[in-house]
Length: 376
Image (cartoon, rainbow, N blue to C red; front, side, top):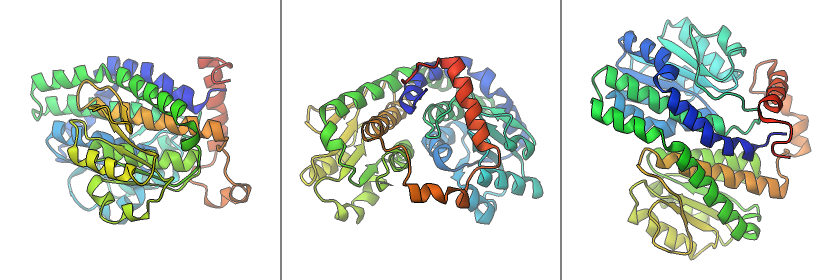
């Protein structure tokens, strides 16, 4: 059976494949967006897809020279559809079965809003609710706790921003080429994050297995990584997990910290003395406080990851977080929810009918593509 950790490891080569396809992969969305005449971009997504969009958002906004919003489907329907008025809407659902994303697409159709949908599953119901649906290149990922799909979506959105921005004149050719080169090495950065997570877990296995509350801190694109970290730890290890930007963290949330809390502070891409100082302070309260950084200074609580450019750095940090969660969940066998929650799961299903069957089909395809022995 292919497991979550296997998909994180496969992200390394999958990212290389997506970057190599470049324009071919994003061209349909680039063409639709550039011809739309819209002067803003709005990405509508939830869960890991929203977190991926938040990671890509800074580069997207800079490359496109336009406002870029990332909103949940509920917020979009309730009020976020109003401004900016002339925005192109991109709804994202990796499974293609997310009922809230489908509802947002229906709202777009009812109000004649320019839009497109991104998915990894053309055969899913999302195809029945969108004017045009594009595959963003995930391939096969059968585990509910998506990881490879998060990496691929970040890469796809960045590629889209580079190609569309250059075509519209918002991004000059030299900078576009530099950014393309960056995306050709994100697989290597991803591998660095995996290696760092393996090493930390091996050295701190007991401390990391206490199932204490967890807090993740990150700014800018790394805020999206912190969001995804909180989601993944909640899903897999079943601990209360929160995320904050650096300054928001020390404006109240830090007051809850006691010895044993897991606190992971993701350094800025260029290095931040402010975040490093916060990490030093929190480390005096809990031994399980770590600073993830590409600029290590040899301090015991630092976890060094490698990244050749600021645009590459989030992929290393994301892989680190994902792999650490997978290792802890494997060690604690915490994958299943409490039986009382499992008994009422159907009462608040978030997927359209047929989702379970689609997962079984993905599992069959994964066994064919990756082999039955993977992850065993």
